Amino acid sequence: MISPNLAKSLSSLPLALIKVFTWDKSFKNNPIIGNRLLNRFGLHIARMAISHLFFNFRLYLLAPLAKAEQRRHFRRHGYLKIENFLPPERFAQLKTEIEQFDGEIREETEGSTITQRLYLTESALADLPQCKAFCTDSKLLKLLRYTSSKNRIPFFHLENIVHHASKSKQADPQKDFHTDTFHPCVKAWLYVDDVSDRNGPFIVVPGSHRLTWKRIKWEYRQSLIASQGKTERPKGRYWDGSFRVTERDAEELDYGPPVAMKVPANTLLVANVHAIHRRGDATPGATRMTVWMQARDNPFNPLFSPFPQLTARVFEFVWKEYMAKRTAMQVKRGAWRTVTGGFSTRSLSAEISPIGAQQKNPANDS
Ligand SMILES: [Fe+2]
Image (tube, rainbow, N blue to C red; front, side, top):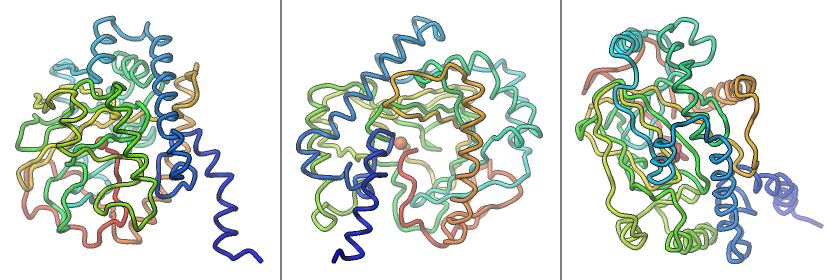
């Protein structure tokens, strides 16, 4: 007679196996990805190496979308930074539109930080003409289609980070050095505010998106620790595949010093978040507004979509449904909330009331 627990574990295996060939990264939730024996034989390293190979192959195919200088910088350093991205007048109009937005937004907690977001779907953009002009800007889309390596048009969000606004006693997990996931993938930000030490710049270790022998050995060791049993894993780390990087790890990996992206407003930053990075420290109450972009896709498909517009519509349809369900669930748990009245775009102290309950599994990769 099979126990109900064993039957449940066995029935979840086929889906877990399929997910090995997707972007799934959780050592905790996927019994195959988190299997110690398979990782001892190099499962994690194989997934990482294959995804890197395909990423670089797709970048090569998509080369006509970016200038040679941009391609070289992105491949070498893992990021691109373009100041004065929009003409000044267009940027001023975009900033005003965002600051005057007074509709419904979502608030999420990550330790002490509150992240305010608005997903810029086609219907949201209908009322935001300046945002729509930015999200359909051909110069921007070409660059993101290349750097995604997938010919992907990303998801766009307005995102406002409010530092130390939650009453959680936990620190913001994004402020520890980490890699988002095992495969190369891209996030981008158009900074609406000037970024300084006051409001938490993006900090990245240039070149740390590249696989070196030291990195491969480190990832191998991490995969073995992550696939230990629940009770054996050291506490206080994330075992969902976003490995945290200690100071000692950073020294051992030997990529060089990190760089804080202290940039003026109207700077576009595109970064491969397989690189080692973190959110910078900030003054309590300080805010940082951006248009935030993300284009994650199956790393094991060696090809890219030949129809970026159609693919973007399909992704939006699926993601909108998924996020609606997830938001409803998190709001019910008290971890997220929806509020009207737009973003808190000024530094604040008591302007925002904290969300009470904390997430058990806060987002781990942004
Ligand atoms: Fe991250």
